[in-house]
Length: 222
Image (cartoon, rainbow, N blue to C red; front, side):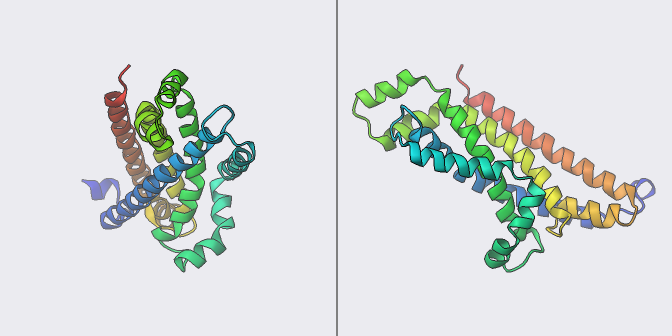
């Protein structure tokens, strides 16, 4: 039945491309989560009125975040070609897409982290400081736990954006469903291949959103 509806689809290639997309998304989401939280914490803590208030440091980190989250992803990939070749040794394959995926998504997520931290009741933070809590204690016992629903919601949005980024990365040979849709689908005028690749990407997005919503709802104590 499937062969009649999708005569040009190689299901082994679809499975392989799906695994490549999941690999790129999974690794980049994990790295983005870590780097984004670090950058977001730095933005929050060095902002005016906070523990590490430092106008110069905040301006530098803020400028870095604004620049890299504003560059269109396809242009960022091209700009990072020398860096990627030096780091990975090639521009072909799923690993070659990781530097651009992480550098493109981490600043975006960092802003979401900063926004999530700003929503925390300042009275809770001040109470912890008044009791003599160390900065590390405030970060791990107050800031991160209190903002966790927002952090999970933010990484869910970022993960969905990263799935789209992997599709764009596929156009320049990074592998995954985007690469399959472009090379086997678009360039060979095989609409069924493009359709199947698109449907699989949509399924991945829906699953990510469902898992993210489930975790966020369980963490949200309001």
